[in-house]
Image (cartoon, rainbow, N blue to C red; front, side, top):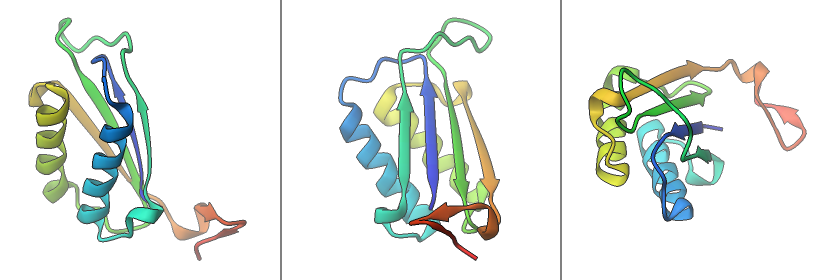
Length: 110
């Protein structure tokens, strides 16, 4: 049930590898099974963040298990190391979703 949506102006060569690796990272940071992590990547987008330097916006949603103050640094480091985007060009949005508002396999999690 963790979901990560990555939007970036960088062009990513190996999209499948990046999606798998970021799924593993989110799984470990949320202590949720990797089999429940969904990841989406939109790359090579027209984005502007003060200048033309590559930038990235990540949306992370989960039913609980989010600790933004502890998760921001490892996620930012991952984006920098894997995508080459400077840490000051990364925004991350965290959203804790109530179990009654998240469904999988035909039913909500509550």
